[in-house]
Amino acid sequence: MSPAPSYRAAYDEVLARWPVPVEAVEVPTPHGVTRVNVCGPAGAPPLVLLPGGGGATSTVWGSCVAAGLARGRRVYAVDLMGEPGLSVPAPGRAVRTPEDLAVWLDAVLDGLVPEGRVTLAGHSYGAWIAAHYADRRAGWYAPRRRLDRLVLLDPTRVFAGLDPRYVLRALPMLLRPTPGRIRSFLAWETGGVPLDPAWLRLQEAGAAFPAARPATGPRPDLTGLAPFPIDVLFAERARCHDATRATAVATRAGLPGARVRLLRGVSHHALPLAAAGEVARLLAP
Image (cartoon, rainbow, N blue to C red; front, side):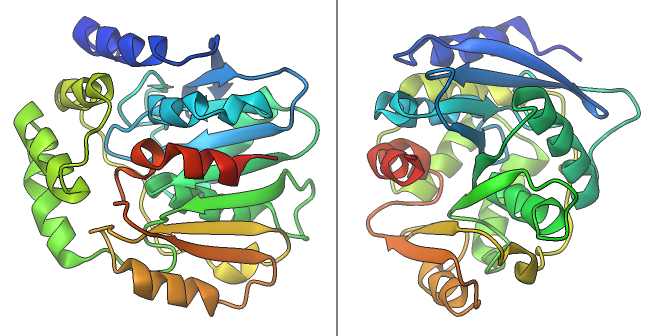
């Protein structure tokens, strides 16, 4: 189902604010056609970005691009399948499990970067997807290792479970989304930090987006992440989990190539927006 014209207009408005030329690419996969927004020098090291769930979309990375991310990277910002955005699910082929997500991401990577390896970065739910993909596809046992680096930005349900208070606060918005509920929830979680007004309007427009059940599953097996470099950045003021405890768990996880850090003064949902400069530096080649 195509998004409503008002949603498409809000999406295009956010994308138009990116300070570099953006190429819209549609990648066919077994689960549907995936929308990817591409920018940066064609020969630069490839960076694939997965946004958080709940309507963040690939456009959430615009602040990082404005902070210089695309100067040294070929950036591939992906709209998640089954989430608000411009990816179009195939009828009867909904993404339901972590393995479905891995099959979908295999096809996305093959369509974007047929040869060579990429840096895969994800925020929130996108980080959960990235960690599952790395565990299932990027280990030493894989027939073709696609990743050279993994970046997890305040990952949810990777090193720590969700805080029940966060879930209860989000539940009305998830069960019956309205623009007011979406804006109220984001204001609560971010502590009222100013966010891009155009991006906020896109979140509100997502209230009318056709509902879809996101793929869920257990936490990824962290032993599968050991063979390659990993950067993990937690948001100190996140309300979705105890970031200090999650940082300690990630530090003790025994991942030899992991660098784990707690970023002070930023919340979970504001991380790619309010801390765009820090994120852009972390994602630099």
